Image (cartoon, rainbow, N blue to C red):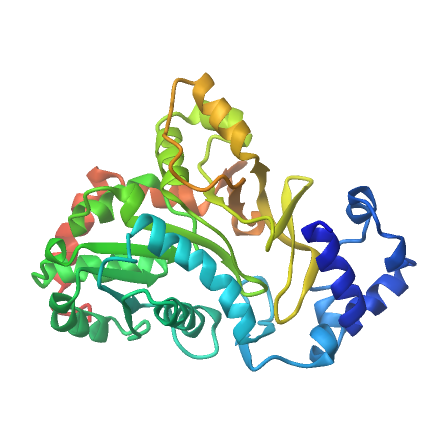
Length: 382
């Protein structure tokens, strides 16, 4: 039985709200046998599914998990998303892929500094739990969680970093850059700490990656950084790999080639994903996913603009354009994500996206001005 089929029939049988949703749309679960049947299933979303049912009925067997996270509410009212330890283990596989394949953490003593906000929000405690799952599997990883307290982050790092082979900062990209820049202003020897970055929550430019790599003394941004594509709804859906980063950096200087591949010259987040645990589909230029979580979701429309590219097709396209990135990563498909259209501002008929502003801010001409200002403000910015 295929991954989508097993998941669908399990959810239809065990999740009260989804059984009611199918009945409402006249769908008999036993008649969904082929992928074509699956692809005709009605889409689920917050408005037509999760907000219409009591929380327990959205969960497996009507039972809420052992932990609840809260979404940010960036598109409306924050939502509650239950999870269990089993859900964390699946997501921890994405962290493991980054720590093992990019950061060589299996053989290096690693200090993981969780800089996402702590509390009910999904990022901080969930990230901490995933790091501890890796430690329990035998990785020499020690986690510390100062959260979004910049003063505490910059206090613990110089005290703890000398005891480890590398330091991984995990957090929201603009906040991590702020931490790095403040550390530079305070004279922190970032290059001595073998810094790595794991980010989530925002599309950033390759100028941004190059800039933070330079300021922390990274030697290979493709192996020293990784962005996670995730949502409060389902945790981490995919992650950057050294391969996907090399591809993205190649395309960053070639907007016309990027347009041929993505349908737009602006650069999306480019990740690889495991279709056995997170099944993606394209729908009218946006992404759907199906996955087993504290609230299992089938053909869930998250409204992120983007698309999917099979692994072989990606490598063939790049070869046609004279780029051979080396394929030392997993043979997994790619997903590209632009974000959500309602974060766009129209200015005199032109669509302005957050990444357009970010790319300009992180150009080396502007970045130098920012750096000078950061040094001047270091004494009061804490």
